[in-house]
Amino acid sequence: MTTNTSAASAPAGTDPLDRFQAVIPAGGVGTRLWPLSRAAAPKFLHDLTGSGSTLLRSTYDRLEPLCGSHLLVVTGEAHRDAVCKQLPELRDENLVLENSPKDSGAAIGLAAAILYLRDPATIMGSFAADQVINPVDAFQDAVREAIHTAATGKIVTIGIKPTHASTGFGYIRTGEALAVPGAPSARRVVKFVEKPSEEIAEQYLASGEYQWNAGMFVAPVELMLKHLSANEPDLYAGLMEIARAWDTPQRGIVKDRVWPTLPKIAIDYAVAEPAADAGDVAVIPGTFGWDDVGDFAAIGRLNAASEVDDVTVLGEGARVFAEESTGVVVTDTKRVIALIGIEDVVVVDTPDALLVTTRAHSQLVKRAVDRLKANGDTDVL
Image 1 (cartoon, rainbow, N blue to C red):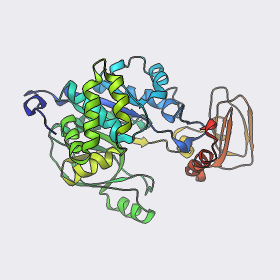
Image 2: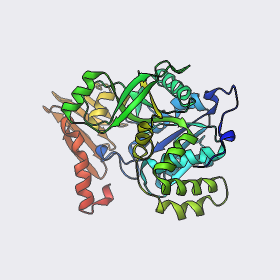
Image 3: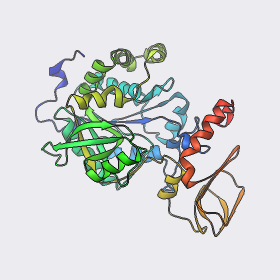
Image 4: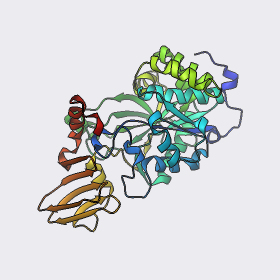
């Protein structure tokens, strides 16, 4: 990548926190939360914690104190109206609409390219729209450390201390401390590793050298684009072409022409893993609670049992009767749901689809979605 290094360098004495801009990739259907989460209404548009705030709104609210209005949301064309309704303060030029899903490489890469052309000294932070994080102040402290570390010329990920030997997350192997001013917990990333077997996950947990990879990245936009250019030159070229037209009347025409040609790849493969091999990645170990709300068992964990026996109930005006039962009920209807003598059940009731499973099998809900898709039953997806 050819850049003007004098323009890309921050002015002497500039506080790195003043260069920070946030990006919220809001994509993915959340198939393990079907039939609540669907293509037209994915999980980040729902309140899944009983807080009165959707996952997207909560993500925006915990980032706003760090970046003010300097925040981009990347989402699908189909979600434009819902996102604008939930985030009325979001400016049009900061709403990045994907023509079709192209994975996180294109989504985060385009945001980086837009921000770079607006101000090459920007430090960007990418945070998924569908995560639950508490306490917020501990998260914000970690982001501030990540910003200070990024200002030294690093791509920084915020890791999550493993609480159990999960086989559902990727892991980050941490190295030595980096002694970054303003970031006392910054460490070198040795490598990213894929989702492990249970035996390997137990070893990772016992070693104390690994963090869960939550997909949070903070980095100078110039450095992000440098690695993207080196590893995925076609993707880089296409995204830069769109970005150059972004703040002009040609935005829609150029995006509609170029977007379908872009390769589909995750940002981990396009940037993070090769950058780690080059020694350009650091990690801030997070000390906050984190959940990606990946299935209905997570909803049960995140919501205290309601007054309906030991059953967690979500849904405005839900009509649930439970006796000697435990589990989770999520309802979008006024239908009476009665549970009697059933343990760890998951019931999700919507006007056109009903799911009944158990917490232990909640990760398998995706199979039902795959089968429905194969059978052509796309009206309920």
